[in-house]
Image (cartoon, rainbow, N blue to C red; front, side, top):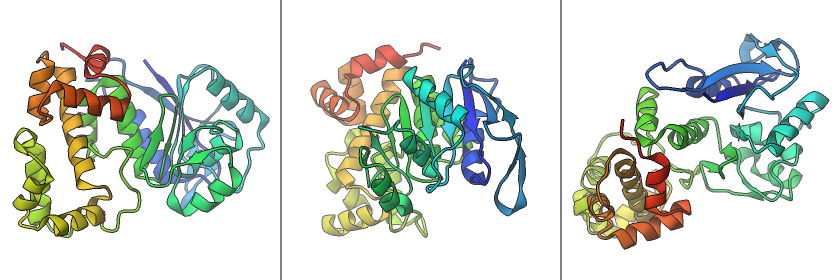
Length: 313
């Protein structure tokens, strides 16, 4: 069982805190060894939040009882002053334990030097301030989240949910991550590589464009190229590409590959089908092509992924 510390701070962001609790704090008895989360603070047991909300958190002196820390928010212009917080988070990081930040929470990690020589992100409106303060950090501009296996940063409030779903997928597999995302009424298919600068994040109506995307996810094996999806939307390829970038935030070919990878991961985790069969079902055409995209996206082979995540239950 992974023990999670959700770090609460005075004048913190209530929505981001709620996202962390929703992801890791709710009881989910149907899943064995689910997270056990607790809202904690190094400052006080009584904390103030937006609109006069008062929050009770357990005051702690150490993080050693925990396996993962989530930092929902932090004031961008407030370097940490609490020495115990500084020492405990630094030690936690040195021990190789997992640390996640949502939105402005990345500033706390930046002030502690945890993001030095790492890729990181935060909400786009904090971009300039973040880059000014943390010159040793490689700021990634156009993503929902960055996660390297130990440290994760989400670009904004709702993107914290995307990062959390990725963590759940890593810990429990694609099927469980999908189930949790569905209960949150959240897509489990938004990758960290998607843009946070989407002009129109929500379609005004489920027209031909949205229907074409839904169709493509269900028919990945039969799609030869993104032109097939454009035809389904009754758009020219140029118009479709322009609409896609403004609505989804990435190139349509990248999105299609991501959908194929998501399906392939699901099949690898939930079935014993051969690599060729998985590749064909996901629309890659061959195991060689699938292996190339797996290595490019995840840095591992499909067979390695199956060894890590396959469950016969």
